[in-house]
Structures are given as C-alpha cells and as structure tokens.
Length: 161
Image 1 (cartoon, rainbow, N blue to C red):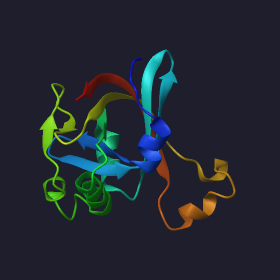
Image 2 (spheres, rainbow, N blue to C red):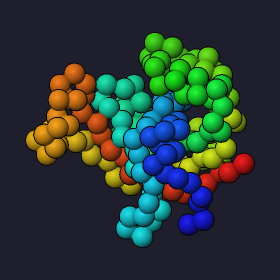
Image 3 (spheres, rainbow, N blue to C red):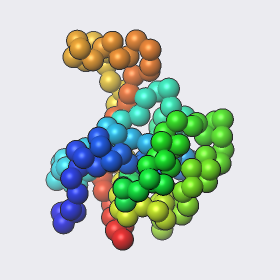
C-alpha cells in the first residue's frame, strides 16, 4: 500500500523487467505494458506476454513472476534493450550478457542486483486475449505477432533499495 511509483511511466516510458523461473532456467524480458493496482482485495500487478516470446511457456508453467524497475541510467537502458531483443532459446546467458546480475528471492524467483525495486508476484489469473474482442484499431497489430496472454499476480513481496 505504501509503494511509491508512477506506474504508467514505469512501464511505458522507463520500462521494467519481467523475471520468471522454470525448473531448469531463469529468464528475463523487457516489458512496457502493465499495471499495478488492487483486485479482489489484493495488491496486484498485471503483465502481458506474447505467445511469440520464449517467456510465455515459462510463465504458463510458473507459480510466480517478478517485475523489476531500474534507475534510469544509460547502462540499465541498454540492458533492458538487450533482454527485450534477445531470446533465451538462442542465447542462454542473455541476462549476463546484458550486464545484469541475477539473484534469487527467498521463494526462488529472479531478482536483479541493479534494480532499485522488485515486486514478487504469485500468479492468480491468466488468460489469452480473444481476437474478436479486441478493439478494431488494435487487431492489425496481431496480424504479424501472436496474441498476448495477460497474467495477474498478487504482490507477495516488495524489495526496495
């Protein structure tokens, strides 16, 4: 409840990193779509992942994910560009190559030493967009890419520096 963040700017302008871990891998991707709020009496984060992303299969298996915000430096921006444009399936060490230092929370979820805020979330709902319910002006976006799935996560831990 005491989280001080400008959520629209944090996602759309500054970008954030989505972290997810499976039994055999840890991945991160840059996200610029998301929201932070309250649902069903719980503090929540909603994120969106395209079916074209390697992270999608990992999110579908996961119980948790993290969302991390970074100080606005050139190095952090370059790291976010890197993890957003490289796939774990092609580059298993992409997080390290981006210059990020991955750590694990007590629950075993990805955190980044360079981040100044991380929200650890337990997935409480997920659903793929339905093409016929999308606004007409948005539908052309999905002619060349897979539909997004939205994941709502209850915030269970907040890590601040």
